[in-house]
Amino acid sequence: MKLFDTKPKSDPHFLYGREKELENLVDYLSEKNWVILLGPRRIGKTSLAECAITKLKQKAVILDARENNNFVKGLNDALAKEGSISIKAGIKVPHLPINLEIDYKKNLSTKNLNSAIKKTKHFFVLIDEAQWLKNPKKVVMLLAHLYDYYYENITFIITGSMIGVMKSIIDPGAQSPLYGRAITKMEIKRWGSSTSISFLKAGTKEIGLDLDDKSAVNIEEHLDGLPGWLTLFGYNYSHIKNPNSALTETIKEAKKIISQELKSIAELGIGSPRLLAILKGLSKEPMRFVDLLDSTGFSNAVLSNHLNTLNKLGYVEKNEKDRYFISDPMLAQFISGKIE
Figure 1 (cartoon, rainbow, N blue to C red):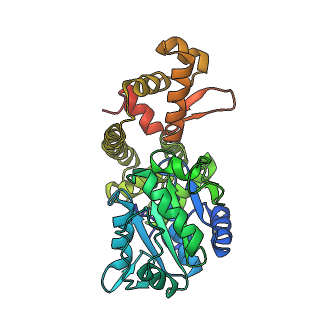
Figure 2 (cartoon, rainbow, N blue to C red):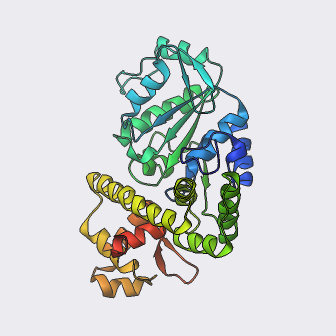
Figure 3 (tube, one colour):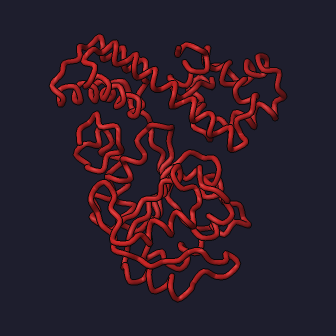
């Protein structure tokens, strides 16, 4: 595995620029704290989680909600596969005959579930991209049950943006089964320009290529501290050998990825034309709330609600001058039509 490998990292040696975050996450997990990793898309949450599991050398299973958005079925499938399950680090978990297809109105503490979980002593469950899970109420009920009865046996690491089921987990209301449970939240920040450029330099050296300072700065300015895009550039550069052509190819691929993401969000019922109207305004330049009111014609309440949604999607942030801006430069270019 190399720095420019586009798959999530599971070897801590290749988790560039996240030493402090990894140390903190390992400390939390060592104490069996449940942890939620939050941050923009392509920031490296999955790699951070998998590397922490590797360092702790414990049994683990991964549920990728993009591939299976039914939590009960996904967890059941992950734990009950014949033979063993391995994550990319090669950590094994033995066959566990758990059946979670049961009535949520019951207390879930069946003999089968009890004995199967208890005999494992302890293992991690990584729920990746949890915002895509269906039926937040059922997910929260099961998580609360597992928290109350199996805290010593199972530690959850949950990644995602604050939409869908994630909102129910991060901000449980007083009536929620998860209300009052202590779950640690870690926000993963984008890289600064120096770290981004150092990553590009280290990665290109690793693959036996050079990258001059001018090209490195140009790439960093286009991709703006998001490890996912920087890694994709590096992967393309390793094959194309020309930095300008590799950047062009990266932008082309970004268009396809972002287009599919927006389609998926729309299918959740939250990709309204009003959200796109706000994004189109912000794709030109960062704007104050009052300027967005003028450009969109929305009421204070409507604009505030939609900005909140875009923030939870990881699409919009606010800078130190109280101006809203699009977090992902590729998204800004896509919305403005600059990506052909």
